[in-house]
Image (tube, rainbow, N blue to C red; front, top):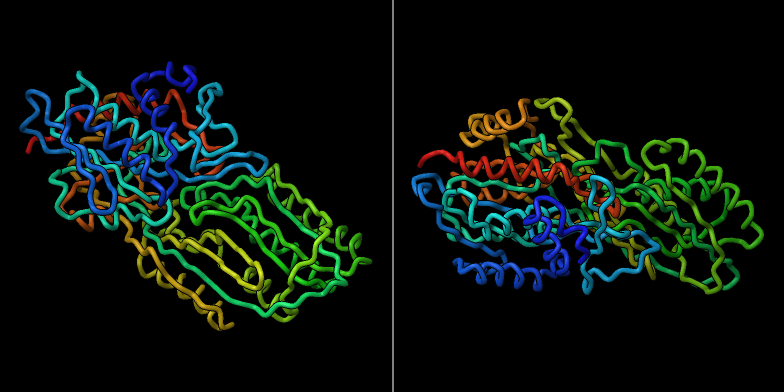
Length: 485
């Protein structure tokens, strides 16, 4: 790993982040990073445990004079979102992240950086190995599979932690103190269509890419383009004017990432190719103008294919196009209680059609359980009315704000002393693990904060160097000021 990263301040955090980013750590494949963190704790001579699902907990005694303070749980998740630019050849299962410095930002070369939540993990590692930071008794909790199911938090051992205060280090604005977050539920939609082969057709591939993408919770309110919805609208325009036959759809990726690239394979009459191309470009230009500010690099590509493909029936494809068009996406409802906060949303994250087998994946988020139920049932009814199957999974609760929190009062006080300004005390629309961990340990006093990260869940992810310095100073002061038992 380049010394360019390791030489940044604070050295201890960037060194640990570099070590961590050398370890492949995709969600649901965290074996290597679990071993890495376990071995790290053991190497420090600290009590280290792995629970039944793979969460790692490292215990560190209080420094001299801090034994009478409340025990603090420092928590971050080990896994990272894997997204890359379509022209980048990179194997996340085998390779470490390639990082570089761009002015005040640390970035990755064409992939996600893993600062979400790797900077939190590296920070906790730094506290554990430090010899001069004053702190109370610590329980460092490293959870797994936060990004694709919250599995680590959901299946956390109910008896492994004894702490009083949870400091979650997964917030992405350094002036924000998080006091609440949305819950979520995964929605999976399936259908199987009859297919035929028509050798007289010309097959073409239409691809929409270059969109900004981003975090489907924190950035859902920014009206970023969703490649699944936008390309479907182009296909709808073509379908209304020409005889086409849908063969394959490949759109989006992970549920928690706003889709950046989608493609359709269509069978068409050879004589219609130029006209369909003209129609597609016309529809695309309308979209391009609409998303000029949020997705300036959006591109449309149309190519002829040499092979033949199976196609679905005309009625089935018209129905599918209409269902995708009508599927809720983006903000569904804003909070009535907190100004500017998204309460409920849906991300139409992934569409895959091949050999007649259709799979659609959504992630519905909400800080209100009744609104979450309302939206998921709207989506369920939309598809089940057309005899599609709809399944719910990975349902997790939100984290309700506690304005009377003792640790909130302390963090606000410390932040004001250090920065001479008020922090932004806020709830967020992302799916932090606090609500789930709180369901295991209901007496915990919880808070979330972290360094500034931009573009999480996309290859544009970047972490601020100056902000990391600010965050590190803040955390150390917070640990020094933890309340008495």
